[in-house]
Length: 191
Image (cartoon, rainbow, N blue to C red):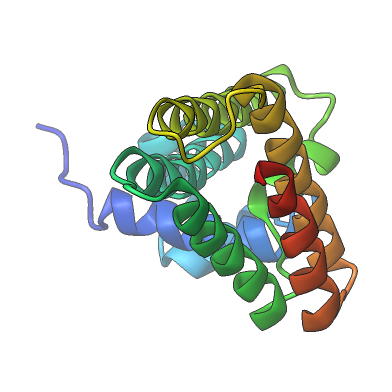
């Protein structure tokens, strides 16, 4: 009979995510992970297969949570501009609160650009963000909140790119005034 796991896998993924997010994949050793999770390497391998699989699960958790929050905010928005501003301000605040940590998605894209699975996860998340913004802007245009001459798909691509650039600037220690100015400029494309 198999011995039951002595840890909560969801909690382990969250704790591993925090460690990978803070240190990166390469700088996080198996020993770091087992110490953080309070389990032996055998339990880690039994539960997740490998450090790489655990990283993939942690990145998936981050992407699902963050992209999911944006999808929920924009799908339920009756005022797309306000919802976008609120979502982007929250990202800027997160960067101001902890600039060293930055965005796990940006970190993954830059550190693990040679790993096809990471590239697929990052690309898929960015496509989801872009399509969510495009859908919200389409609805806004249909309601008359966005000028009929505006191209929701092009604006969504710009805003998705802007979000990632803003996250990088946050990690580069851009100050509040800079991020707020950039945010206002980016949202002015909706006028």
